[in-house]
Length: 396
Image (cartoon, rainbow, N blue to C red):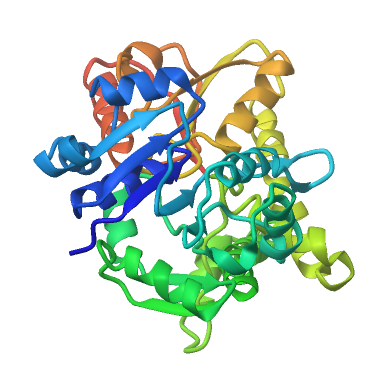
């Protein structure tokens, strides 16, 4: 039976699901975090979670095996899952939280311990940043095990993703990778592939960069089609009949914690060799401004007229607003003095769309949540039945 003592460092979007699944598998798990409120809420069982994660949290095994703490504990395995955001001015990774976490882990490391970094990092971070920090704290790298296992999670479907997705585990040594794989096999049903730490770092970034570049392509094609008065969606549908073409559809931009950030981590370490990646990032980053410009055209005659934006999250069927292009569009227009409101069915659960739309002349759908689109349809039907004028609906 796998019954290691595990300390998960950072119990947010990534760390908490991992910690709970490890606890459910029988491991003794400490969730370490510097956020005292989050730690207190977890220990009081008052934290808000997705239903599937809540179900796991309430199991007998987790109640017995998991606790949260603001004190770093000794363990057999340390899983570091702290944020690595982007420095927006420099377009480089902000590794402040990661460096602090590694330093704190180093203070309690013992011979034979395994350290796993799940945080997304630029290539060579394990060797150029993490190992030097450990060594400065007196850790003999030859006497511990070190691995990088980048997370692969999708907000809104966390449990399914963390359990069923394939995982890449990069060990600083072969034995490190094998020991890390043993831990993940306690709950991962997907295929586990072993490699070195450098390759694992790069793989995660390549996955999200692939998506970002392909999204940039269709967003640019959308701008070309708009200039030529061509229906881009119809053109893409026809182009996709080709057996080796499978284009996405244009959107309002790219959001979330991964796609708008990870490509910059590659560009950071090799700018000369990543000009396409750089161009794609600028194309996608420019989308909110271009969408805002289109919306301005509808209000060109009267800046004071009311209109509404539907959707605040970075993608449909989630409550995640990190790096949300929809929120950027809203802020652009609001700061320019437009009379604009925003509604999101997944966030604004205490509001009623029907009470908000009668005075709006236009409704712009930015993020088409299924429930929200159904709600909108019912509202418009009710207005028509009452003989009232319906706002024009424009979908991006």
